[in-house]
Image (cartoon, rainbow, N blue to C red; front, side, top):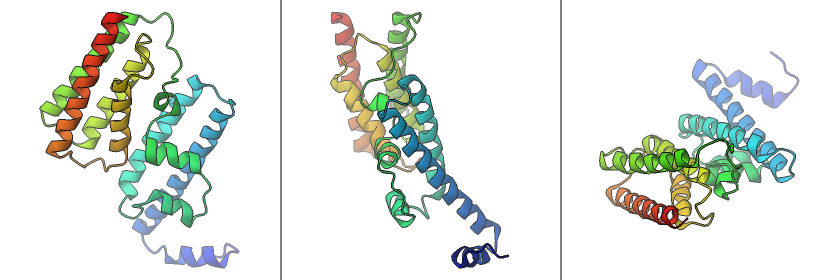
Length: 217
């Protein structure tokens, strides 16, 4: 086999088994996700794509990144080092995928307004239900990252549909903060007792704050 590149030929000669080829393919997928996210973030910042189109695309890329990183974490423990190794200039992708773990629309509370035909009462009911589900799950010892993260993601998205809630509400910030924290952990990691206790406290505080805001609206 001759690719015309001595370095590439040397690399390919080392791929003597299926496992090594799979690892290289995973690296290529990780590279592609980082590049795609960088392009998406730049397009959003330049207003070349609207929030309505940006958010689901970004959520899809974040989900793909989380799934892939859980697979390659043993060989790529530091994604930013991976980016440096391959000379990837993707600072916006690094922030979104590695540090934030949520679309900019959610992180900065500028999510596109829901369809006006949607019921405000339904949005409130969904928010209350997601609060209860998250807190009950923790009390039932569902403390692994891959169990908690989706519940918090659903909760944040439900809260943002309730337009009467203050955009700078402390409860929103607290839940988003936990999402970012969990995003950087392996899916199988289980929260320690003090972490569970703090998360429960933050969720209960956010729930009470939400109820007060709704009553005064």
